[in-house]
Length: 81
Length: 376
Ligand code: FES
Ligand SMILES: [Fe+2]
Ligand SMILES: [Fe+2]
Image (tube, rainbow over all chains, first blue to last red; front, top):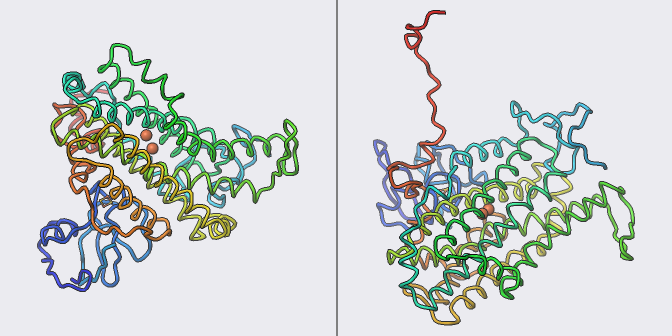
């Protein structure tokens, strides 16, 4: 996947959330609840798809995702705010 | 239009806007125009907690150890939060319920307000433990100038909307003279007042608690006032969900997914709404200044607190299409996240799991052999 233009590899067997994956690669993402209801981790999804393991309750636009409660299901390209 | 507690005309709530449609009649949730509010209700209820479950007794000893400057910081913040929750415990009900027209939003507002009353009760729980007579603290909330300044800005948009709604519901649209003053009541004006009020509430939930939260958690980083910190974490968790709800309302309007007239008003009043948010930011910074007037506390100072307010403001303004007006790009108080994270919130010491997962989990699957011993 690409984060702000940089490459990073998310392995499919990984049971981490996208947020945890970014953190373990030392990429700082803003967060509070880590449970999909606060919106602090709101991130722009430029390309690709994600799957939510927790229903996202926080407001996000059509081209945005909540990394704390999803995992990529394809190659993705994201921009952090 | 006169308010009725049970609108006898059958109406299709799926076609009603969130506000200013026909009054709600049946409290039904089988069909929802905006299902997000039902989801927020469920989430909020799963967070249920009682202040009395949190043991604050150790805080009394800690409080004696604090410097005078630190005590000023601690009690001032509690006063300010008491003001905020006093307003929030009643105002969404009084201002919004009479004009809401879909049941899931009506129930969300009631649920939201109810949790604000838990917050209010928790301040009495904290203060009773610290002071033999906490009445001096409560009495000061109404007379303290620094708090009064904020109270005016917080309550005025609610008061305006409530007054205009009362005129409209008793006299209808038109020009009405009350106590020698003329008020023009039109649907457009009412909706504008609603829009500005929602922005003011959104700014309150987004920004107004965070200086206080930061101080509380800075004490907790030094292992001081930890009972208080536990309560504030539960409050912060609730505030985050309240903020989510106001962000949804504002975005549903702005994106034309509800009342088309509200989309026009959102565009028309964009700058005014932004000014409301920026004023709340400014007032929070002034609050930080007031808190530290007698000296700062270990781990925090005015400058870094102001940066934190700007950092939070950037994120929360961006969420409602107001851009990121401040320079700051990275979190100046990263340890705050540990306290705002749901996983670390525990209600009672004996609980080792996340309260939101424990509460309300009732197994609805009953295996047939569970009944085998019963003879009917
Ligand atoms: S951290 Fe709260 S929604 Fe992702
Ligand atoms: Fe509250
Ligand atoms: Fe709140």
